[in-house]
Length: 175
Length: 372
Ligand code: SF4
Image 1 (cartoon, helix red, strand yellow):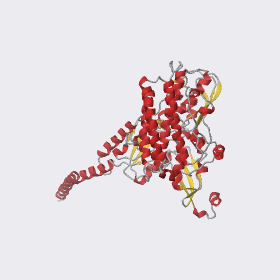
Image 2 (tube, helix red, strand yellow):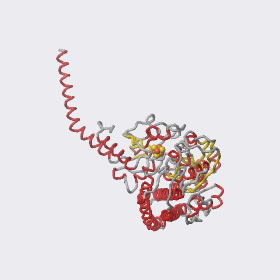
Image 3 (cartoon, chains in turn green, blue):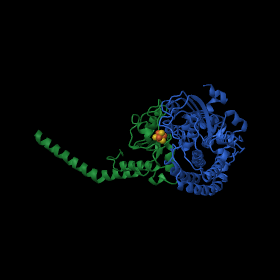
Image 4 (cartoon, chains in turn yellow, red):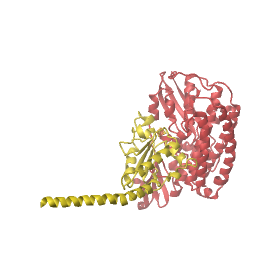
């Protein structure tokens, strides 16, 4: 009798699982696709310039490279409404707690682009007493854009790579 | 704190807020503000977010290895921060830079002045709600970057001016391109005047705002565009001619209003002079070698030197002490932004909150340069 009941619940679970799968494909997947598609063309970055790489972000926002084509503005008001943080170069000991604070204050989902050799490994300033050797210890990074400074084109490529990543994100939460 | 009672009879009115480091109007920089309603009663700049220890690093790299990291603090003006370093080291080594090298140094330095001023004016336009100026400014700046890239091979960090001359010769086609760019830019600057500097909206938002009198400019030790907008005729190129500047004809533009508008307009006048200098230098360019042969690790005789040049933001200076080894014993950089930062708390007093970005950016302050 117990065995029969177990078989019954087993069959039920399988059925639920099947329905779940079907629902996942029928509703969940388009939902995930839709949500991530919505996110990917409106990446709004926090305006936290950390060092000299910001000049190339400025150039990328200018008329020639025009990063608004990809749905990204250069400067935007409140960080609560932002979902992207571009770490533009060197992070010093004084800035590191602020960077972490800004990251923690942003709403999920959020992504990080580490721009420039400095934010990846410390770059030219690897042996300076006041510079962090990469930002991985503080916040998780999604895309690394190497260069010192990366050209504006390279930065835009990093942005497109991030959009690719968001498009392929496995879950509804965008991660 | 005593601050509050100091500034207002009823201290409840005073609110202290901080602007930056995360703020669209202040990158890598923070200002603490004490507000009474819409008025700023006191401000306190908090710099140092980008202090990277350039001076200490300079002590454990040799004179040639120092070149790339020394140009990073002011990446939009990278040739001008290397210029005094190169002249200083040349003076220590008693080397005579070839004439062509001197001219190329001047050309590159002036191109960089334009690149830096374009960035300044473009962002100033943005802060005043004049979006045409940022679109045009950033777009046109790129054509100068193109020219510099043809000469030196990189977009912003050229490492072009080095001890002993310049790194490489200018290609033939870049001379032609440079002259063409100068002609085009002359016309373009007339358009900026029409659309931006004569715009009544821009006048309304920057006239009589952040006025710095001539006396205050002297007292605070202002330099560059800030000093020149307040009627102080300071220009190292004229006062202490160096490199190829004595052979070239140009003026030092001076204005007297001392407000945010004048500080922006002086940058435009500066660019007009820079175009004049570039055109003359490209036409006069002497032939010959562009640099001296230096080993990879040149030994510099013991001694001490103070060298200064005129960068885009003002006077840039180096104090280098050598003890005869391949590395400097002490390397002190004096940057114009740090000199102009002292003016900020003076200007940010009894102004509207909405005027802060115009005043702050009007000082042409670049935090990375100031922090070193
Ligand atoms: S990577 Fe290079 S350009 Fe970017 S912040 Fe570091 S030193 Fe500056």
